[in-house]
Image (cartoon, rainbow, N blue to C red; front, side):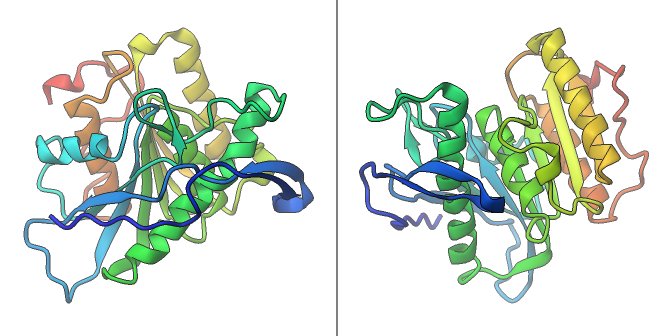
Length: 271
């Protein structure tokens, strides 16, 4: 399978001050990891056809191979979309991270560091999307972002800020970080499709957080489906099946009752 990489910005760390979106001044970190991605095509891929695109963001200290494992091991059922998996722009302990872990030159708290990092992460994703669409025919009305854990937090940030580019967002074991993206900074998400999946083993606070996310985003006009399942900080086969059904619903190819998204429904691992 074709595997490409390209450099967006020079490797190594550079720190500078600039004006962020909506007039906010902030410190920005340039990526210290060259841009890299991997992808999978549908089994019957036809270069003359347009395809839905799913951009996957891996978890902390992992890499772009993590989302591909879901595809390779059959967690998706006969996927008919292109899966594009992006490597995060910062170094972790053993893998890569979407937010810079520390910086010896600046004395800033973790929340400020996440805000400083997110510009580079968003830029990385949008640059790779533009590059990829030069070579592959993508349905402009069907681009989704998905993420796991830290990648889910970033998927919500990038997708909800760029509703003119992305039609949907799906997050596993993550949530909408309102420190990074206050509700007033949400894009026009009235037609946005949102899928949130969380294992109940993550704890009461995590469940409460995603329920709050569902309420906030629903009030803003998004179509939100929350799927809670048995388990902890993991992606299960049933949660991937639920997400793929969510894709089908978004494409109007499945009836609304094709999959159950009730919060009290816990045993769909047997689906």
